[in-house]
Length: 164
Image 1 (cartoon, rainbow, N blue to C red):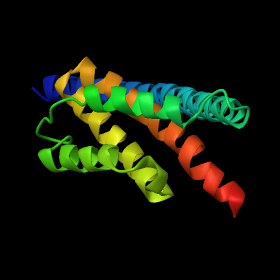
Image 2: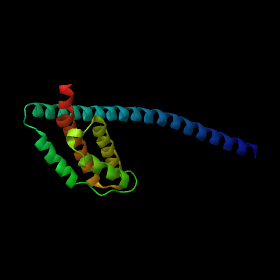
Image 3: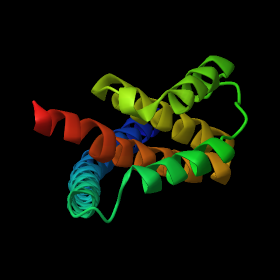
Image 4: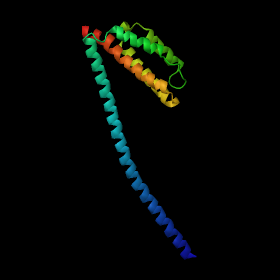
């Protein structure tokens, strides 16, 4: 009887030790994988920022040369207004929708940087809603809205700053 208890305890101790060792080894492996994913995520974020900066610079150059004017910006604004998706419930609420309509109806010559920042925050909410509800139309629209915010910043805000 004592021998059976001793054998059982020995087997349990061996299994527990093996499980603990396996857990420690897996923890180290997952930490390495997590670190690699974090580095990949950082690189993607830097790439996204670089692409955004390049796009903004390109629009600035085209605006400065008179190729991209307020007429083109107004056309893009009309497109954004026409494509305005109906609100959902969680992130892209009726209130957010109404605020975006107000911003798009506002005279673009009166835009401030706060308006541009608000458009970008609304684009984030629309994208978040699209991902949560699997609505590709919302995700696509969020990119278009960010692009319009960039255009509005370059065409309507930057010239005011150059004058001051």
